[in-house]
Image 1 (cartoon, rainbow, N blue to C red):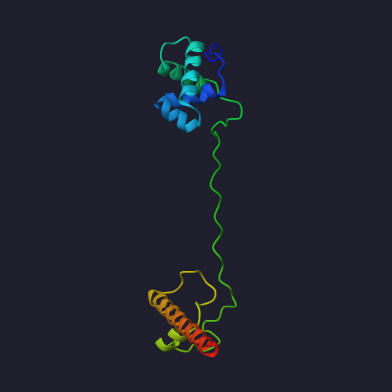
Image 2 (tube, rainbow, N blue to C red):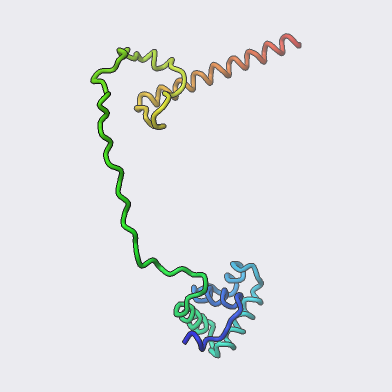
Length: 163
């Protein structure tokens, strides 16, 4: 059947594909950035080539012929699906790990946590607990406020010196 179908221009093919999807001439013209008259002319030409009375019939014939004969440059679906890759083996525990840390850890107080500058180094980005995130936001707000006040005082001092 694919051998008996007439050759169509690329514009005619585009129009028939969109007709098969249910678009009218105005919508096709908008999508292809051509005039409505051009769309109608392409569809009429394809009607003559196929020898059918309606645009839907021409679109149906074109789409069914296109599905039967694959286009050059299209890919066929994969027949062989590769197996999933093996995951990494679990890491063996290091024999040099001490049971207790070398340096004694100091208990962190709330004041020390508030005054700590910047986020903790290392680790993932959301490693902080809810309390730590709230304290980081408060710290950022306080430091921003102090910076704005210092800038305003600097500007005021500059105006008093110049004025």
